[in-house]
Image 1 (cartoon, one colour):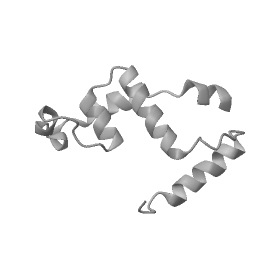
Image 2: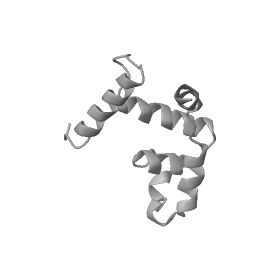
Image 3: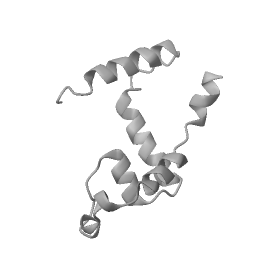
Image 4: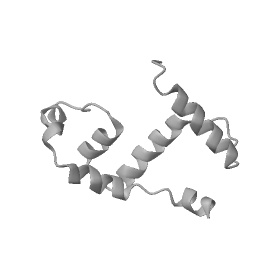
Length: 92
């Protein structure tokens, strides 16, 4: 661990507890796993999912994609597909 996300993780834990979410397995990294799954489930382009998640290419072909020149609209389209309806319902 590099410690860069430590304060963010602790803040997330405090907010989750305040919202009544007490499962100790629910950590900030859980959102990353579920978010990636939700993006794939929404048929978001694989390269956009990797960019949003900060992952490197998973295979040789994808190593040739110059992600730095892909349009930001590709990422926006992916983020628009990311929904957490259960959280929205809980916050009402």
